[in-house]
Image (cartoon, rainbow, N blue to C red; front, side, top):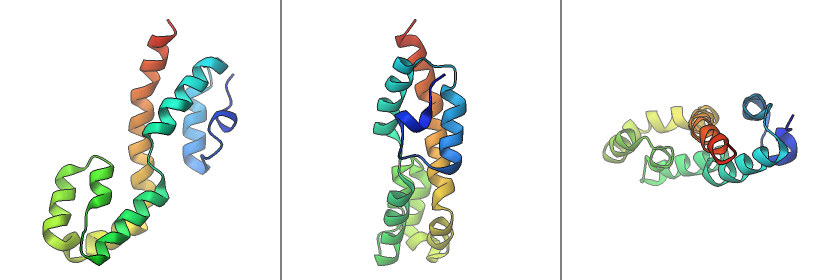
Length: 118
């Protein structure tokens, strides 16, 4: 049974629990492969917050591009973060935005790791 905290010590809270549930049946080698790919692709909630706050300086929506919400990123860019209201909401919800993105990334990586070891 692989331990997510050993392979990904930077994770916290809900994200750590989620990853632990995904890799619980992995060997240490599989968990290490998963961790190296996941670490490269995941987005840190602090990065999402910082790029969201750039929206108050006039360039809104960068954080949406980072989490592959291109349509919303363009909308935020053209409307000034929906007149700053969307930017404020996203600043408050930055952790859930990052977690949702990271869940999708983890779901994409699991089959890759299983295929590499079969």
